[in-house]
Image (cartoon, rainbow, N blue to C red; front, side, top):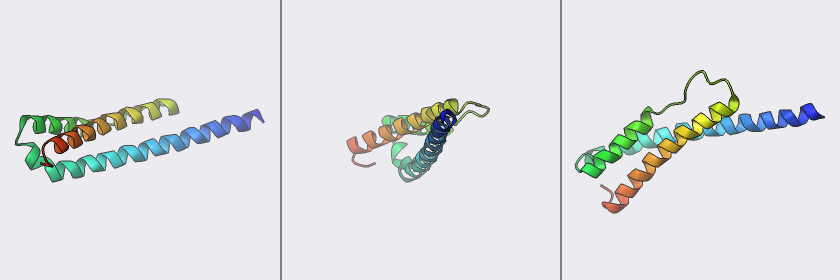
Length: 101
């Protein structure tokens, strides 16, 4: 029965990795849509340009290839997700303070 318990953990990690990948892709799509929608307004002010820099950084952040361990891949995906979520937070904060650009 010990082998069965281990396989459940492995399946759970695989599901977590798949979810992290999906979230990472969704956040990338949201960043692209947001940049397209608000780019012109953001370019008008220094704070907006800072938000655009954060978005560009988040778009450029990617999962490193060659990671062999599943936990390494999950952790790397979570790092990318965090970078993208922070950029989206900065965008929303800017928009709420500046009337939606």
